[in-house]
Every structure is written in C-alpha cells, then in structure tokens.
Length: 294
Ligand SMILES: Nc1ncnc2c1ncn2[C@@H]1O[C@H](COP(=O)(O)OP(=O)(O)OP(=O)(O)O)[C@@H](O)[C@H]1O
Image (cartoon, rainbow, N blue to C red):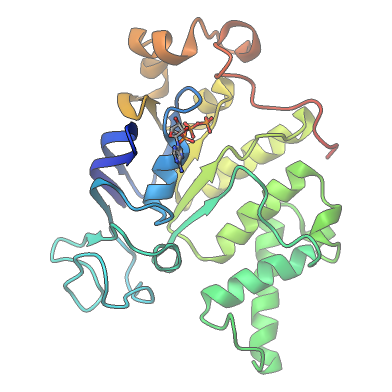
C-alpha cells in the first residue's frame, strides 16, 4: 500500500530520518515508536509531502480510479491511472494536497480543526473538498444534502453525531481528536497516519480514542505514532522502532517488546500495564490526567 526505500532526511548536519526501508500493507495497523527526537514526525512529514527527502523514495499503491492528484509533475507515474506498470506510484516530492488526493491522510499531534465551525461543518467541508467541490459554493441542494449525509455517517462512526451542531471549540481535547479522525475519514483515505492521537487526552477518554483507532483499522491501512506502550501492544499488528532516525526493529509487538536493542534504546524495563512506572520517560501512558474532561 505504502512503502519507502532508503528514505533519508538531513537538517544540516543532523540526520533525522536515516535510510529507512518501510512497507505498510493495506490491512495493517503498524505502530511507529521511538524516543523523543527519533524522527517519527519527520518520517510522517516525508510520507505526506510536507518535507522533501534528501534521499530515497516514497511509493504508494493507489486504489482503482485514484487519479485526482495526477498533475503530471513529480513522481514516476506512467499508466493512465498514474501508477507504474507494477501498480506502484512514485510520490516522492509530491505536494501534500496531491498525496491527500491519492488517499493518504493524517491527523496531527496538535488538534487541527476549525474551532468556530460546527462539528458537522468540519466534516462536511472535508467531504466536499474530497469530492472535488471544495470551492464550489453553488452546488444544488441535492448534492449538498449528500455531503451532509456522508458527514453524519462519519460522525456516527467517530461517536460525535449527538454533538453535530456544536462548535468544534466546545469539544474536549479527546473529542477534538475524534473529530480530527472524522475529518481525515471524510477525505476517503486508503492510508491513515495518526500522530499521537492520545496526546493530551484525559485518561477517561483514552479508551474511546483507542476503540476508534481499532475501528478505522478494520478498513484502512493505519500507521500510528504512539508513546503509550500498553496501547501499542494492544492495537498493533506490527511495530517499527526508530532510534536516531534509523529502524532498529520491525516485528510483531511481543517480539519488539522483548528485543534487547529496543529495551536499551526506548523501553527500559517496560512491563505491561505499568507504562508510567517501568518504561523510560519517553514511553509513557501517553494520557494526560490534566487534560480536559470528556
Ligand atoms: N525543521 C527542522 N529543522 C531542523 N531540525 C529538525 C527539524 N524538524 C525536526 N528536526 C530534528 O530532527 C530530529 C527528529 O525530530 P522529530 O520531531 O521527527 O522526532 P520525533 O520522533 O517525532 O520526536 P517526538 O517524539 O518528540 O515528537 C530532532 O533532533 C529534531 O530536533
């Protein structure tokens, strides 16, 4: 579904992402973990076109009919659908909007919704933009109704339908993260990149966000950055560990947990259910009891 080869990003003398070969399958929930500064966010930025790599490539195997992002520039697209003969499309250096139109969407560490718009409007506008009608204010009522229906279906899925008419600013931090996932779903993604969706979420709300992650993973490829090792162990099919920009482990959760190199670099005595007690300061519960109530 999504793969990188030799992906490298240098900022001056610092190598933030170092020669990373990575592949995400279409039915997979893969977690990306590692200490602060390991390069996780930079890796996300390279996958989504926010940053251009210094070296290496990013390729996507897009769904049938995904041609919206093909502006004829960047990437080694060859076929009518923009994919190469082997079905893979080179998206190295593609612009973020092009990557999104090809089906790769992300949520951010910092909540990224329009606070003054209603919960429904946030999702409806994203659905309309994904439908190619983002700037068309003159849709007939029937078409607008379809986007509203789609938005309600998504709000149902992210458990926010009963708050559709409230301004997004009225939501708790955890509910805003649910809304962010809803906005990402409205883009009709194949791949979802979730950057610490539990950061700052109150402990009461973490379970709801975890349920949502597991639910969206049933029909999307998901790459999750998460510091809470209990959550990582619970939801992941596979775990990739970055340290100083390089992959030091890529395996099933239990194998990664028991890997001595991972223990040394990151986990430092992590025991299930005691993420705060035994793990290094980086691998925490990820919840924030000081966060807003649900
Ligand atoms: N725009 C930039 N310019 C210079 N250095 C940067 C830039 N962005 C990131 N870095 C550096 O690259 C390294 C990797 O940072 P990155 O934010 O990707 O790590 P991370 O694993 O996401 O960390 P965290 O878990 O704290 O979010 C760090 O040393 C960081 O200071």
